[in-house]
Image 1 (cartoon, rainbow, N blue to C red):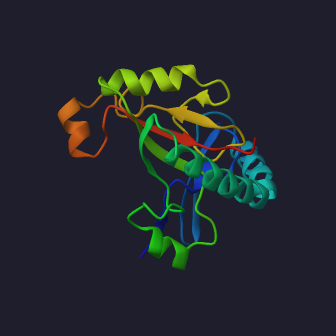
Image 2 (spheres, rainbow, N blue to C red; image 1 turned 90 degrees about the vertical axis):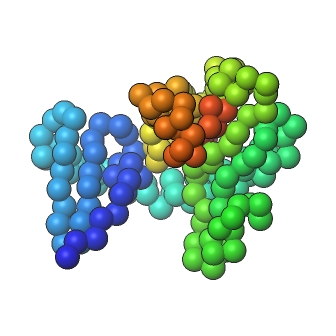
Image 3 (cartoon, one colour; image 1 turned 30 degrees about the vertical axis):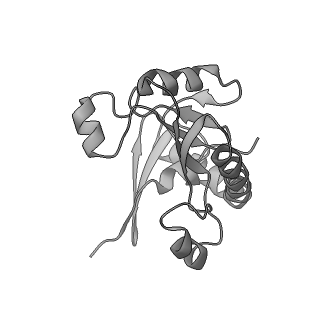
Length: 171
């Protein structure tokens, strides 16, 4: 029996230059470039700063989630630190930190335009679909990570056109 911990590689490394899948007792590397030795170096480098990055991302996540929840142009915010999150009670019991990934929906008559206008007008985050790095990243899933799906398929998966995902870094 194997236990898969998904997306762990995004946090263990601190750059987008390798992907890792972890199973209990077995580490498998899949590289986008470089050798196994280079992948090991990247993994070790990422592990050295993991605690500091997670602590800062947790702190940033709570601050930004609270700010967004009170913003008049934001319709809804999903972050487990917020009492409005459906799993907040469970998160309070199980988690030492709530993470640095926040999803939120932007108010506007045309949902797709409202979300893309917001993403295009921010200045600090980079526009990219990833997470766990030192830099803050932002994306509109309807136009990036779920672009290949129809509007109906996205809606079925809970991906609305005005949904924005923010992965906080350590800034």
